[in-house]
Length: 323
Length: 279
Image (cartoon, rainbow over all chains, first blue to last red; front, side, top):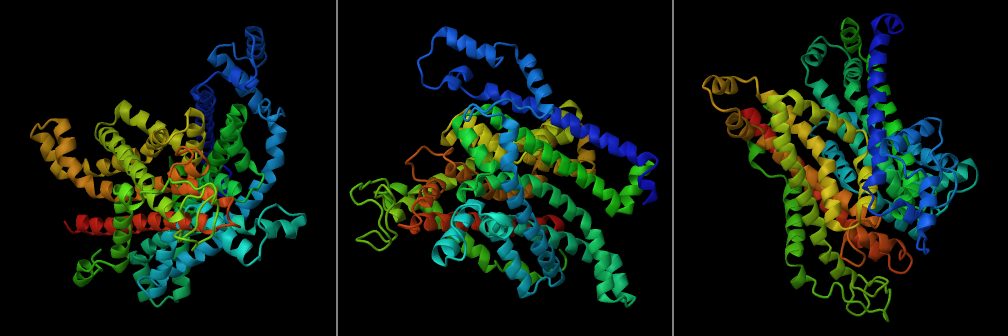
């Protein structure tokens, strides 16, 4: 562990961080190009269906810097975005930064809750299926996980709403609630709907990773030497950790895709709903800002996953240090 | 896997048979939509929403008075056709680009790799929502967007499989014999990566089915009023109190169909994998 702080490891970290920044730059260019992908004139969209004089159109263009060349516009947008200034929303007329910030809480709470649920349920279930491979419990859980992976969150969400909110009345139908416990109660169904797909994915991945390790020779040897099963399993789990952690990083991306649909289904006023409304309204500055924010979070998650290898696996640590 | 006995290899699991049967049913509905659900789009505004079991409407009607059963059966077409095209299209791109990038390397390989990095850094569904929403609404536009978004992972998959094949003796001897690279790529290597391609194709169909219905659910896929399960769920969300079946029936259908495709895909990839290992 000491070697983590000195010597070549920081160089590896720096290299990886540089690659992340480059990727983000490329993505930001792609995201900015969205403006040009959208058919129709942005200035006209801004004015809505009102009758427009050419002067008014030119004035709008000048105010939003739409008359400048593409790269100049991109540079202006990027330098502002870095400082957290994403411009103003066309639909609401409000600055985008604060607009996004006030909606982040709900999304972060729902996604965080879903992440926690899926990991806490998925990893033990995955280990259990791997240890009991081929038994009925394994088969039931594996089939259930295929259903979980296949079922779209919004369909599951609607079914949950119907059964637990409308039918049984255990949970509120809409709204976000006041205070911590009330909010938790309101976010329970959305989080479960989001967590089901994720959890199933975690089960599948954990099962595959643990089975791969259980088939290794060292396990046979450890068992042959009479090592207690619990001790063997501990070694197996540590070795299986790398692919599992990698998938947890990938799940962050999945969470953001799913949260749009879940928030729309449960009418939660979070970032996902904001994204849906902005896309339907063609509120492009907001769409750009949100897409870039997601790209940032996903890239940082991938970066952290790569760093965590260094801590989890001494072999990876040795390899990167030697290089 | 050598662990599996010979007896286990012959028997087709019940789950696979059930999945195939369900998919066959959905496929028949998709092909013979006009015969099976001729009145799917017939509206009855005066009737409006009614619950299940009312005068000839087994599952009730939606807000336009359309029969939920017929509408759901008719929705099979957009649920199958688009995903099949997405999976086939993205695999076609993945197959040619991936084979070339994997065998030849160089600039194509580099560009394909960076392109994949770029697209995989964003959640596919989210990107599909953004692009489909901004570029235009419509079923086939959405299908095209999904082909582009799905192709990077297929390129990666095929490229990896080709790189694994390339150093093997049969390729080396083919090269020594002076066979043209294009012939080596598509006559020698291609047959050996077919199992991976086929297994992945089905998994992609399931993924595309979920993605397409998600977009329709948000109002980006099919035009308003068209029979589509995602669209039905979006409409049914407002009707949960009056006729919950308007949302439950298409919801269950999406879940069952996607699960069946995935189960079949898993079974097929196990089977093909085993054959590759046995060879």
